[in-house]
Image (tube, rainbow, N blue to C red; front, side, top):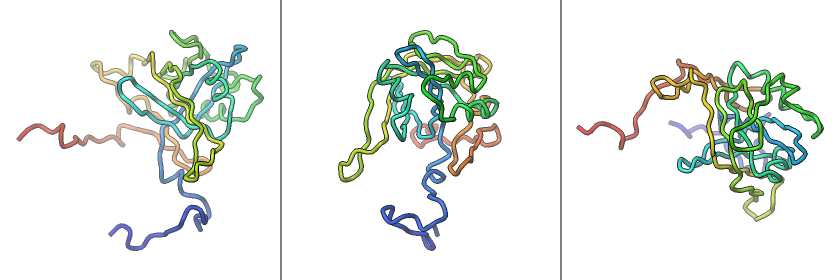
Length: 212
């Protein structure tokens, strides 16, 4: 039975383990591969492992930045950004864009990626990525702990105002998740997972099951 022989710790006291398992347990997580533009027109592209979708209509996505990084500064200043789907084919390029670079340097160039204009927002898209969400900033929130102390982590929430999907991923008008082979962060120094057709399964919620 789960929990009969469990390692227990209070987070304030440390884990008592060689490595903190939090990132590995809350995972694998979608990657927030975020492109932005600063007011001077300098491009930025960076992956964030704390990312997800938070609302259907309007569609809202968000990512958390541990530290006030160029992406957050750019989005605060311009009010927009683009999320680009990170795939197995683009894994190495995505990883290159995680390098710590001066704000004046362009991660698109470092990753050998093509920046193309978006349709609505100012931030550029990654051409090689098969899915792009153009987003407008809705909230920028500095996180706090249980004591109300402000943390050096910012949650960026944006409304998706335009979507680009490579047509080969639409099968009879239905998006094929596995065909894109999205990669996800799985904790540790370099652990990732990839979605493949073999990893997919179908399970209907009780309210969606056919009557009878």
